[in-house]
Image (cartoon, rainbow, N blue to C red):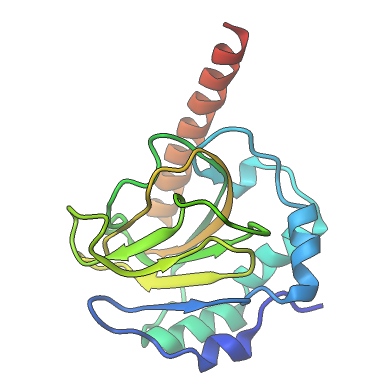
Length: 211
């Protein structure tokens, strides 16, 4: 069973201003969502976790395989007009939001394209909806807001003005982040950084629960 709706991806126009992005609701096909969510890694702490550090089942693995597939790379190359052949990639996963999440930022200059796939069955919260923004200073200066509902894809080209963030939300929030990056060295460094950060957050969480 295929996980992604590539026809919907190709049919969705690319918004080019103020930076290139597209949003594809139901990119993860309805028939695949239950398996992906059933096999989603259990993550009890805020932060982004390298996928290699997590335990998950075959439904989630199928999603990872399609993210890494030549078909997905080719679809992104065509949509964004960029050659990604030979570029390193990395995947991180979130399961919860914390009080420090959502601050307005652009991604690191070493990231070429960011892909976010949301896997929350419903979303009725005021916070936690990612906003693409026109400036780095005003969370209300919104281009578009994306509720993190299961199956939704957001992909954007990293630029100096690809500002994004969300209002405060604390609690479960499932999102898979896939990036093409400039070099394999960047991938190794970023994975190491996320690994250390994840370890510190897990350790701090255990300490707080035992206090």
